[in-house]
Amino acid sequence: MEFSVETKGMVNLKVNLDFLPLKGQYFLWNAGTAPVVPFLPIYARQLGFSSTIVGMIYTVLPITGMLAKPVFGAIADHYRLQKTLFLAFQIITAISFFVIQYIPEIQTETTSSQAMLDCDALTYFKICSNDTNNCAAARLMAETSNNGTILCELECAADAGFTKEVCEVWNVSQYCNLMNDINLLQFDAEVPLSHTLQTSSEQTGSCLHFRVHRAFIGSSFHVPYCRNLTTTPCRVQCRDPAVNEVFREPAVNDVNVADFYQFWLFFLLMVFSWVSMAVVVCVGDAICFEMLGDQSSRYGHQRLWGAVGWGIFAIISGFLVDELSKGRAQKDYTVVFYLMLFMLILDVIVSSRLKHSQTKLSTSIVRDVGKLLTEIRIVIFMLWCVAVGLSTGLQWNFLFWHLEDLATTEGCDMLHWMKTIEGLVMGVQCFGGELPFLFLSGRILRKIGHVHAMSLVLFAFGIRFIIYSILKNPWWCLPVELFQGFTFGLFYATMTSYASVVAPPGTEATVQGTVGAVFEGVGVSVGSLLGGILYDKFDGATTFQIYGIVSLGLFVVHFLVQIIIGRKREGSEQARDSGSSARYAAPNEALDMMDDMQELTPS
Image (cartoon, rainbow, N blue to C red):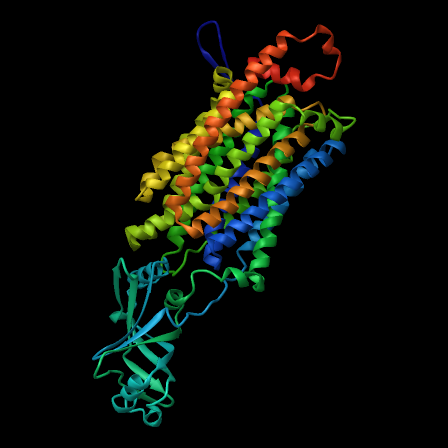
């Protein structure tokens, strides 16, 4: 859209129909990926993977994107297949994401230390945990008002004292001759859910106490009580999915994770989807800049529609997951996979109508891009992309983990609306952060320049993460998400416009792919790995505090380095011989223009 002012002072709104499908593509692509991408780390946790495993997966994924972006970018440039690859990988993305929902959860059994049988005048077995499973089961029983009775299979360690109680009080005669041995007592317990109690303390965490009404041993039933309080560890398997959720291990042992086919299915589908998204993003940005031509400052006006799509459908998705998960022990994500599929199908249709023709061609893509990467300011730019990627990897993959851990400390009621909160978080990120900064990105870059914008992004990440580390209530995360305008909106506009201007003719997709590969393949990859390790070793607050301090340190380093480079450039310009212009100077000329911000002046 463009605005022009007539002589009478009236504002006339003009719509550039050539750019309309471009805006629609950004909107639909982000509207299609928003329902799934942010929730995948949490979905992996629900499948049974630990934060270390999730961190490792999200370490490999950006590396696959790092390899895919320049490779397919070069193929798109050399064979002029930008639009063909753009459409093909949109379809692959939709299929890969959609199939993930059919991966079954990894079923793990309880260990002897999880369930404890307390035999007294009334007999209960209990489980105590700091995990959210107890909240999920307690919430389910509260919502359904389930007053029924279920059967649970118990296998308990029986020492001499407990065996004597079973023999003399329970009247189980076959145990009377075993009172001097340690045995396993196996029985089916009749459990009335209406008598289930929930307690919590700092020492034990949240505990659920299930009353054993009757015990079935063989073909007879017995009244389970003991004259003296007896506590013994048990293994429990109940014929009810909600209660079984309480006894499920929160995560698979990291050492044995490769033994489960669910891990490989999830990992491979994530690789396919990540590679596809990487190609769509880098080729899509190249197509956008080529369609804009000399109006590169209007990139933010196109890209902001992606923020609109992401924000709207992130909020909708979070609300739908919470609403449709009522009465379930775990969150049901089925609706978001179907929503994703529908929106990406629309995206393919709209993208096919882009009026894009690939006219530029480089005679030697490798030589031109290789020469570009020898420039010192390009090297600093690449290192900045890595630094931002480190923080982005932590935010993308572990922010919601941190918020859900905070919600657990606030009580089970907070977890009921957790997906809605997460949807609102993404909504604030998009509408309060990304959208205004993408819209104003051209003006901001003209005002402060790319170099200062880069420093500002690192500073914003540092402050943002420090605030995360002191949060106590997930709701207070919402105003913090306004920093997304700096850490993604301004960052992405800076990264893509910088890469677009310095790219030699005919290498646009290759350069965009290379820059994106460094950002995700190195920065996000390492950030995810380190984030997962730190999260497992410490907690979310400590991890974000460490990353925040590092980001502030990198901000200072980047600021000082750019000052030194600027002073050296000023000295070299004064000593530059006029005859040096005969050499290949495209990278330097482009960078000099960017420093003066002339390339971002609207036509």
